[in-house]
Image 1 (tube, rainbow, N blue to C red):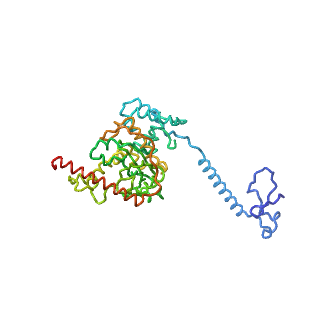
Image 2 (cartoon, rainbow, N blue to C red):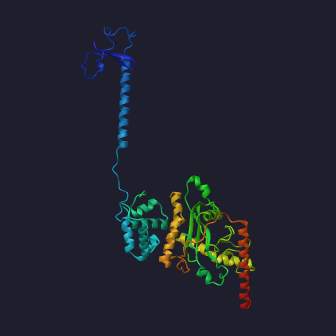
Image 3 (cartoon, helix red, strand yellow):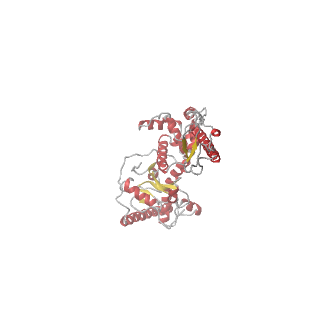
Length: 419
């Protein structure tokens, strides 16, 4: 007789078989009275139970085979299909632009050929170089193409055939002021204009409420200063769209916005009145559109002051319009992290200044752009927010300027016979 083996707590009596011979269930005798004592006393596996075990074993084998097949299919690496297969690579396209029609590179990248080459040289001088696979020229081309078109990373990757992964100066009286009798000598201490610039952004879900401005769309509020030659002199970006211009100005003055002593910027009524900012009179006509609709003359010194203030401060509106017109990415919210989005305005302001320096006729503005005057970093940062005494001092200075303007205006009208 063979030995008995324990299977699931029950016994099967084996016939004598060879050790390596497969078991034939049909040859197993479990019903012999000679070999098996009382079934109630010795609960051996019956034929039905044996059939049931065989069925369970077959099911387990089937399931296991299916699992092995699924794992094999899941881990089997499909033959990769190349995505960027265009015959014209990004480097080839940049070379094509550089060697093609002069206006073609201006249309596609926003700068003329000589400006592009000068930018490359400037980047090389400050330490930028080629990456392992992408030349410096192509890197610059990718950045300019993104900012000019506002396209997504995926679309730009298709164009270049790469994967998705891959300022504050003080100055003498500007010629714009000095050579205009409407402004000089009244605004002789003015060095430029300041304003908030809302740039459309695409923040994370938990930042959208704070980024929503008073006009209803999400933006980052950037504090920008410019001179009268259409040059940016200061850009502070990254603040939420709901942040007030005055709050951003206070932060800038406490940190890095230096304004020369005795000089000031023109600002709107969203900013505080202080020795560094000259704001218009409240409750009087101000915006140029209001004057254009009425076609009337100023009726008092405050209206005359506001009119001259608006005409001079219009330079900040112009330069913001020029920047947004040239770089569509400032109008169409890009799908980058806010860290990257916050760096775009100052970077593009630098490129704007570069174009103004080397290719001023390329600026889309009717005014003539003159060379900026650089006299170095002067002035100092603030020790705190403007005090009541400073507010009163600047208000008195504003009234004095308005009175002088009005006296000059009346005298000029009398000289012309009251016309």
